[in-house]
Length: 86
Image 1: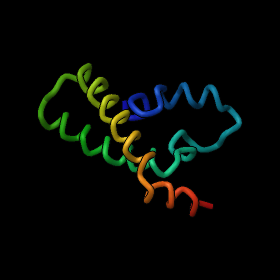
Image 2: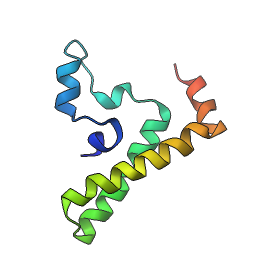
Image 3: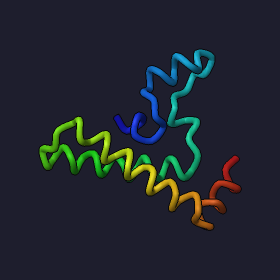
Image 4: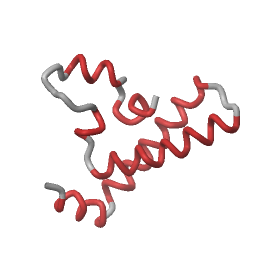
């Protein structure tokens, strides 16, 4: 569900689109996406604990992902980390 919220596709869809890639969708993520995924994991656990319906999770996770990615991509510190990646 987290991959769907951030990347707009399931892990299976990504694998089907990238058959020659031995990794997974997260291996291809940039720094901002990885930070966002970590935050979404925490939020997802909170939704589970609160007993929210899974149908509502995806909507809320997607809204959060969009908001966080806008902030992270605009952040100078995140851009600095991107330049340092090998």
